[in-house]
Length: 430
Picture (cartoon, rainbow, N blue to C red):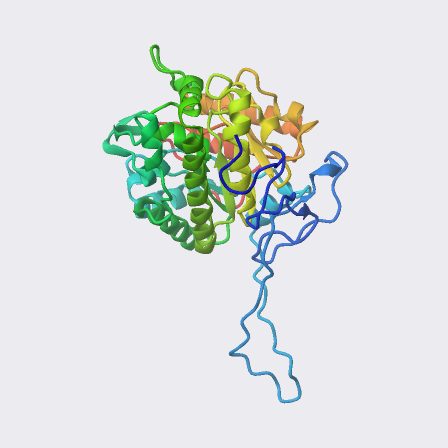
């Protein structure tokens, strides 16, 4: 069934701008995100010529109303353009088919309990970024912040792993789908817009990508249904069955709920951009796995809404698909700059294998569970293997959020694998 707005008849690979006109997003040959960066015009021979894409950006303007030109001139003197940081130049060169001086590297984890307070979380993320000299920041929020916006509630004093205990499930019956309405003005979203602004103040011009979860992922959580195959327990209703039941009984209401979530995310991401974000880290979670959503369900309930959210983003679009059989190729669509997946999980290609077919830049290289085990040697070996297989044409990162207990030595091993020098403080084991 098509979305409830007048966006019917779209092909699944098309990303549609907010105007409603089907179109691929602009090529990567133009000037990219603001702050004065430019794009290389030539690519090294190991890069694929089809990978030239760059974010759609408004023209930069300079406010010259307070400048007084010389009497003989009527042309105001423009303000100098700030020089982009090495980290920003490195990140942008990688995503536009250029030649970075080295592979960009980053990592992220859930900071519990700091993630329940945006001031504390901003301080912690900024401190980790300075300690390890990360090249870009995937803003890792509380995993439940989006379902909270729509009406789920959680006990932030009780966690299982990285998830707080759910105390209210919004959609318990098909009739409850009507409760899913636009939540753009929810306080929790305002808090996370503020998180972006706080981080921008703390980390200068480093690329900042806030995390949002796909509308289908949010809807599953609102029904209390796992969106990861690894989270399924014996006796749990299968997500595919939950979705099939909702579609059978109230198909229009399912799409209306996805519409409300999509509209909320579009508004929210626009506000994060105003607060200083450089794009989005868009996670479809584990919904590409056939036991979470069938290929037909994914095509109907995820792809068109995902594309609409992504098309609204002015900036870099990094897309994440989680777990085994994650189908990164499904997310390699026009307008997507990078795809992140677990290259070590069953059914998934390596960076080198995917690099032969993906148009987008690959992200990953190190298994997040290996990092979670604190295996410094394993992390070092996996990072080196990724570097040997993919060269400089990727972003080095763990395959997902690293468990909170990981010692600093593991992060240092990841950082040092790329020959990192500038900006990193000495790492000490916690």
